[in-house]
Length: 183
Image (cartoon, rainbow, N blue to C red; front, side, top):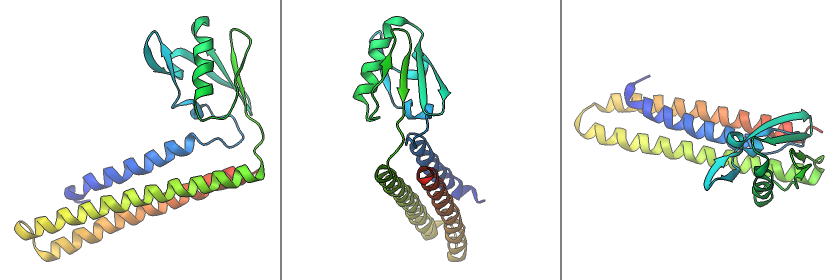
């Protein structure tokens, strides 16, 4: 790959990786500790990620167990989970917090699939914008440094990179949709 296109490939990869991390936070009726990735807990005045202040385990397929390093954090963690958009009420026994994931209804599954497709489309738009920026940069180069044939060649390479990420995004959307719709 031409080094002039490497930066655009890298940006498209970041868009794709971001999509995958977003998919990780969508719960599919199964307990996935990544749904807690965005939750911040006030730890002595510093917002900290849940994994930094507690041990997060999945003892059963539909339950996440959170054991804080310090017992005083139980209330803080519980409050942070309730304030998040998880939609799950935590239960605790004073030492351990449990999150029980209910079975998803068919309607909720369909809503999640719509959300997945929307996030996939946003990722595609981001990739297309990166391609547009790359093409604009190549046109500027063409006025001074390289021939029109080289520009066409680079634009074709950039399109191939774009197509690769579009296919990856479609595949990721299909896989996550299938995962959500599987009962």
